[in-house]
Length: 283
Image (cartoon, rainbow, N blue to C red; front, side, top):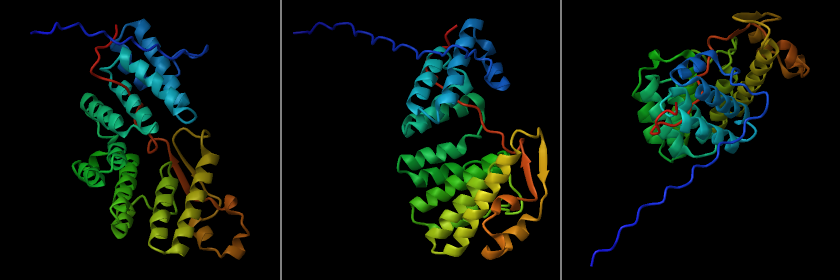
C-alpha cells in the first residue's frame, strides 16, 4: 500500500537582529561598500548595517555578531565580503566547520587567498592539523601580503605544536619579519608566538625576552596608532640597545624604550569581513 506523501512544511525564517539607531551602514569600509553595488539601494543599505554590527560586536558578543552576519548572508549570499564576514563570526563562535565552508566560498567568489591563515586554524579547530599544513603549502606564499604571510607562519607553527613537532614549530616562525628592531601591526603576535614555542622547548630566558619584545612592540604601536597615515618612525633610542640592557639598567621602564619602530598601515591591512552563498541575493 502506497503511503501518501505530505508536503514538507517550510521552516519560518528567523527574524533579523535589530539595528541600533544611528548605524547607517556608511561606516562600512569603502571597498566593502563597492562590493554591494550589485544590490538594490535599500538592500545594500541593510546589508551594510548588518556587516557594521557584525564587526562592532564580534569582540564583545560573537553570537550576536554571527546573527548579523547570517542576516547579511540571507540578503546577499553571493557577495564575497558577506561570506567572509559570516566565516569570521562563525570562527569566533567556535563553529569551525561552518567557518571553513564559508571561507572556501569566499575564496571562490573573491579569488583571494588572504584568509588562508584562518582556514588553517579552522582545520586545527576540527582536529586536522595535517590538513591545515597541507592547505598552507598549497599556495605560493610570495603571492600573499606580508601580514598574511606572518599570520600563516603563526597558524602553521600552531599546527606543528598540535602534532608535537616543537622544533619545526619554531622554524615556521623564523621568517624575515621576526625582527626585534622593527615593529609593524603583526609584530606583537609574531613575537609572542615565538616566545610560546621557546617556552615549550624549555628555553625560558629567551622566551621571556621575546615576550617582553612583544609587549614593547605593542606599546609602541599603540602610542603611534591614529597619529599618522602612512609610515611612521619613532626614534627615541635604539630598540636593540634597550633590549640588551640588564634588568637593573631598565628599571622596569620599558615604555620609554620603544624605538626604531616603523608602523606601516599598508602592511597592517586586514582582509574584509564575510557572509553566506547558496541563497540568491535579495534585491
